[in-house]
Length: 397
Image (cartoon, rainbow, N blue to C red):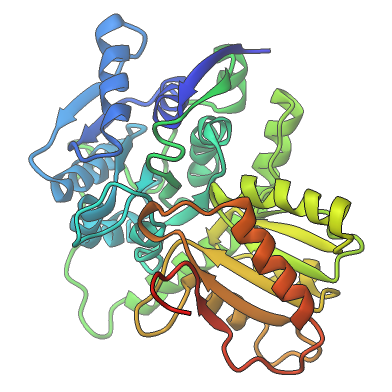
């Protein structure tokens, strides 16, 4: 057993990176992720971590430095949020295409204007096409554990992709929770030192990285290889979760986690901190209202677990997707991914999207209860004319 402490989500992430024995940490401050950096610097100053801290001049430079550090064989960690993450956008593609397993904590924050510190998953979901693995977490313990798992996943030779560990600012980042800090000796057995083979910049072995590619070069093949790696990451995420559970006594389900789905007629699908509220609400609805509702916790957004979701939702009549994000002009980002995985298949469940909690607006147990009861009433409808629903919009009837 490790030591238990009261930690914020950000400090839980910092302890995870320390235990992973990261060697380079390029950073630029932006709330609400800055306290990760501050804690990491404290570890370095106290001698608890032997790592190089690089205070970059911008988030774009942070990712450039992360790419360079990883390319010379150093295990690298960084973090960002919101507009800072958007400023990294160009270099996120570089990290993925050059197959460098950087790990980044993305502390979700609304991308303004208006300027706000509240959480919104849109900042990371907007980066879904950059080729990064994205894992969404529920609480500080999961943050701590997944920082360590992320290196095992990204550094696996079947994968070799960067990994984003995503959790909500303020709600998880600043809230204190009891966290069991992993034992260093066990982490060292679980996570061996980084030994890159494919790309290592070395003065004794000169090479070019990121050179110009003309129309008939290997651009298609490079993107195909990224896709293959992302597909293989599904198995690796599940395997790593299983091994982590055997060693540390905690596992999270890998790509998704399902609860109370054996006899469910309807299901709530959500991610991040809303999972905790949804879980307790569903228990209440089953116990007090007799509503057969189940819970699906989406952990991996990239790679998207289409097969796994089809299997666990195949017997329910209706699914409500609750998400703290929106693709303006389309609807909820997770909802459209779910629609895609059910495309051209018979006997699909009714899929309804609820956009709520944007910018950190509180999502209460009563909100989720109302949505679930409405879903139960609609479960036998053949078609819904308004599948994308904005919830909590003030001033509308």
